Image (cartoon, rainbow, N blue to C red; front, top):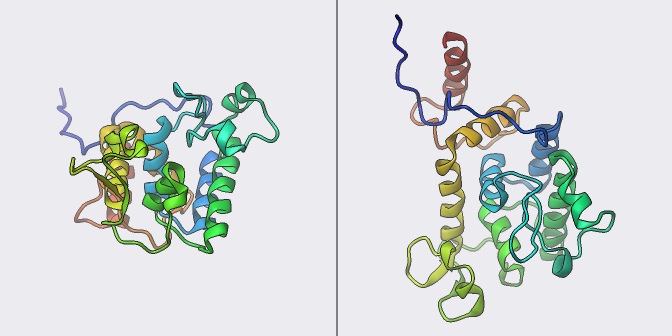
Length: 221
C-alpha cells in the first residue's frame, strides 16, 4: 500500500465549487482586478473575508453579496431586488462589485489600488487618501466606527490601520486554505497575476515553479 506524502497547506484539501461559481467567473474577476490595478489574490482574500466568496451571503444589518454592500446607504441595486441580487452567480455580482470600487477610485482620481485600500473603501470611504502607508490610521478606539469593527484591529493597539486591513485579508487566505487554493488555481489559469508575484503558499520556489509543482502533484495523486 502506497503512503501519501504530507501535502502543502491548501493543496489537496477538498473543495467542491458550489453552483454560484459559474463558468467564466474567474475571467470576469481577473478582468476586474486588471481594470483597477489590484492584485487578484489579495482581492480574492478581501472577498473571502467579506462573504466567504459567497454571493448569497447577507449579514445581520442587511449588507449583501460578495462584497457585503448595503443596498440602502450605497444604493447600488439599480436593476434587482435584494433577493434577486443574492441569487445572482458570481460573474454577474462581480460587475456590481467592481463598478462600486471604480466609482470610488474615479472620485479619488486613482487608477491603481491595493486590496487594503479597497477594504478601506468598503469600510470608511470618507477616510480614503491615495498612497498612504500601512500605518495610516482609519479609525481609533472611541469612535463609533471602531466600536462596531474592533475585529479589524489585528494588533489590538486601539487603531485600525491600512496594515490591519491587509492582515485581515492575509488571515482570510490562511484560514480557508482549500477555498483559497481553488481561487488561486482559477486565477492562475486565467493568467491573472501579471506583474503580481506574491502568494502565501508558494514560498522560496517562485510562482512558476510552484504552479508547475501544483499540477505535477495533481497528476501524481
